[in-house]
Amino acid sequence: MNLLTRVKDIVAADLHSLLDEKEKKNPTAMLNQLLRNCEKEVEKVEALIKRQGALKAKFYEEKEHAAYMMKKREHQAEVAMKANETELEKRAHEEAVYYKAQAMKLDDLYEKAKNDAFALQNQLQDMRNKLKEMYHRRWELMGRENVAHANQSIKTSMSDLSAEGPLSYFSTVEKQIERLEEVIHMAYERTTFDTKMAQLERELALKNEKSE
Image (cartoon, rainbow, N blue to C red; front, side, top):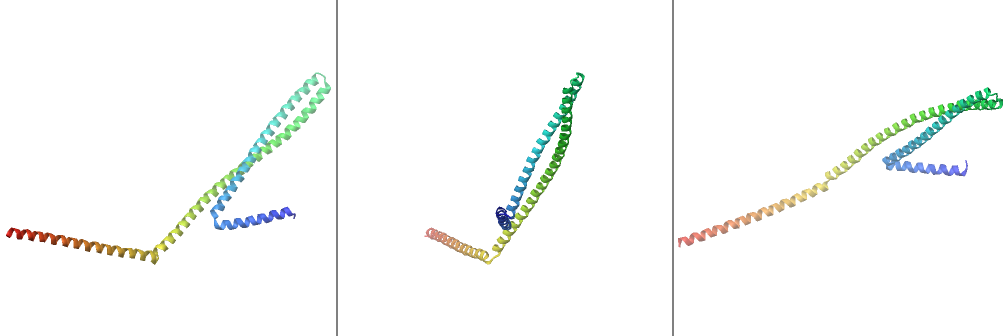
């Protein structure tokens, strides 16, 4: 094992260790990162399929050209034969044989490229379906995580509300309000009593004036 490979393995091991630790702290973030990596892989496959499609089109173009040249040279060989042009006939026949072989070879390559493109397209669709399933799974886990956090918050809040501190504080405030209500009530009664007595004195004074 050379030095570069050892360094790469050490870095990879440290990275996996770091990711494992981070996953424990934030599993949702790690799941999101995994989905982003899968999306990149899908994009790579899409690019390869596009290149495969271009290659298939090129093979088709070349095989059609070879077939055309084969027929052209065959026709030219017949023309040369009728004209008793032996050398031209021989050359046309040789090229017709060459283009025929090329057409057959290119046809095989085209069929293989077409089948490969079809297979890759099916695999890409499978990847897309799996990716969609992973998104559905992520949403499910996010929902479960939300519920877990909400339940934890509710449990903590209920524990705080059930503690003696908050209840005793409410009890203290209630007693203070009761004392305030009592003071206000007594002040109102005193004011009412004084008002009634003043009114009674005025009535008696007025009565005495009339009797004199």
